[in-house]
Image (cartoon, rainbow, N blue to C red; front, side, top):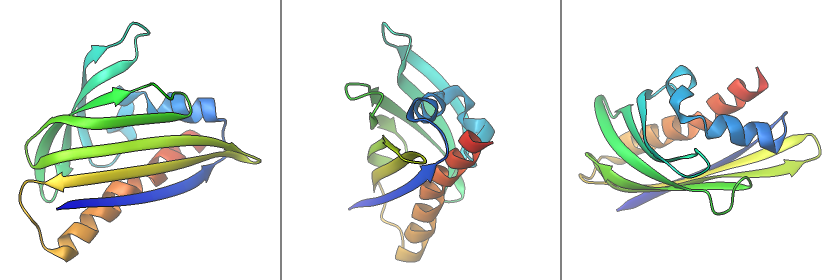
Length: 143
């Protein structure tokens, strides 16, 4: 079963700055609470990370997954999908950066399909932690 969630927040910064921070994957462990380690495996001709391996804390254990990033709609949108993972079958996600009067609206969309079903209350708690990444991103950008 695929679970998905969406969240958006207005950040008091330009869309360019928001995009730059969101695509600096190697710094994620410094601000994204559950991300423990990041390794960029491949970059494109513009030196943008296209294949990135993550080690994260999830559901009381450590998990590894590899995401492939799509820059076709950048800098307005950054999309990704999972190419490898241990407790997930699939991850699809995106950040959208929309300029607004007082900054940038960042929208975060994520869908995850786990290998093993988990109870609803555990799933909701995990979803809240994942979506809290957007609040962590906002705090970093505005600091």
